[in-house]
Image (tube, rainbow, N blue to C red; front, side, top):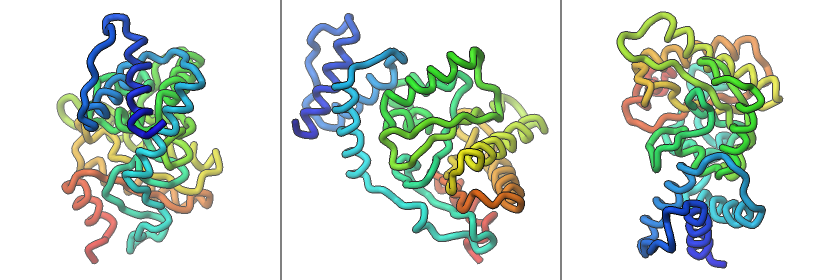
Length: 262
């Protein structure tokens, strides 16, 4: 089965779960097929799936990751002010490290909006449907929504990292408050404590809460850098923390805070 044939197989299998679609005509364009597959994965509820589907999905997603290219966190230039901190602008789903951090919602089952641009959606799309199934099992066992500022760990499945740390950041609806700031600091602290407890050596953070949750980017970066720096002063387990950014504005903020311009 070729790579494109695997994609068609996955699309048809997912469509077969939706009785409202009876033998629909599939797009011929590759990018449109990829968007359709991602959309179907995004909206799929967390129920069981066959081993053959998972085998082909894993082969397909792993090849997609390889085609995008993988960046090893060990190769990233360290900050001039702290040799255990690095800054990287890129797609967090292409980063090879012990764990990446996912900015999740309180349901902790991923984003169900088709092809949404949030990091939660992107991570689940690249990892595969096993990630939602695993998160669903965790949340069913817990029995209540994930509190803001805490963290959970899962395998990364088809991502190049080993684990995903899921944390729920604060939502800033009006003005920024001290409570928001403490909750965001708790996100970073909880992820680092959990990573150290699990014996991980490297962690990559996305910009928690600065997207859909509207936390001001500069204030968020200040909290992130301060919390990580304070943690590393007493912890000996974590060898590298990567601040991963996607937007140029965030990159400029972190560059200044971490003295990359000096």
